[in-house]
Image (cartoon, rainbow, N blue to C red; front, side, top):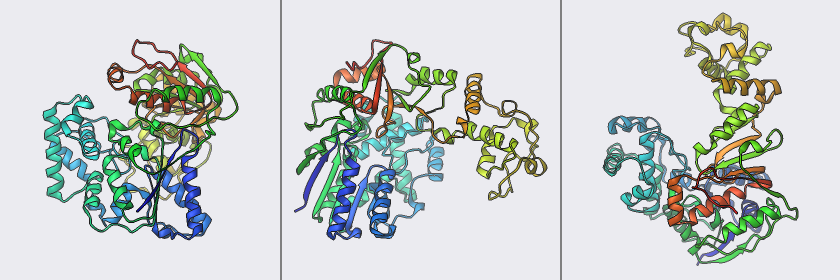
Length: 502
């Protein structure tokens, strides 16, 4: 009989840290590392656990075979080769057959949470949600209020199934099915599961199968932060699991005022585990504002959070006008092609060299034939291990452009130019992390900042769902306000469709 210990950790109480300490204790007690499973929703958490154990116990990665995401564990256990996976070229091939444009961004470990904006991506997402949650496809299509028709969804899903079968391909949801059908599974003595509230029905079946022969399992999560039910997450399964319950008592992130607001929101959730937890001793602040421009974000770390991406436009425009260093959504500032191109041009003109990857981004952003000789833009035959100087590029790689970056870089609108001029002047352009991040609430879970702005408006579609089934929205805004470590700003709604935070 497997002993189960459920660890409930509210925001900032240290769920992952607690799991890692327990993990270290069990290894110190004599549990073999190769008989321990440590599973989480993200690669980042797995990497942290693996590196910590390797360092403390002088182990290698080979000793920690089952420190993985659930998808990765299935992939490895089933000995699937990369050619069998539905991704990359296979996605493009299917896209042509199905006559629907798609990027195939739904990859390992995202569980459909990273969705492309092409029609095919949305069709694929709907299909994956239905399979991962083991629900009827048509009911999922209705619940997601997809803009495409049911006939389109039905055709796509059948075509996808037939294509994978004909090519002997598996996607990452299929791998879970195959694993659950296998009679032989890894023999583990103890398993740890982090972010359990985000697991889908199929992922829970994998965990249950892994648990069947083990002695002990720790399952950590926070049902109040279960904001991915729409993407197949099965929070009810997490709540229904029998076992000893441990509630982490102190949030090291939240001050008193924000803790009180968080508790007020969580108490509105009907399906939840009651938790007694406290905050830090300092009070913090909550400020109501009527415009984003009332907030001075010229210093410090900031998050600006909205229910939907389009609600961030005013905040983005404000940051651009003020010349503040920001990034938006999943796209980090350091990977922005214009950032890289402007940096590279400045470095070249200072007498420094740039890498091949920097050169690629630079050439993508330089004006046509007046900037680069014909035939050089694709950089064919150029040694990608070189470091390139300005003179070398002029003599050997077709570079014609000269002058200030504003005269060389194309594709920027006037607002962007003003922003980058400010960033160049402050040297922020050479930093890898922005002070200000604009994000949807779903895109920031797990993040935190000293200062957080929460936009209270919601879409009409969300508002309709909220009035029928409010728990999901309570959880979303609970996550939003609990990102703040010191100061919380509530941007009051501009429309009648909003979430009332207080």
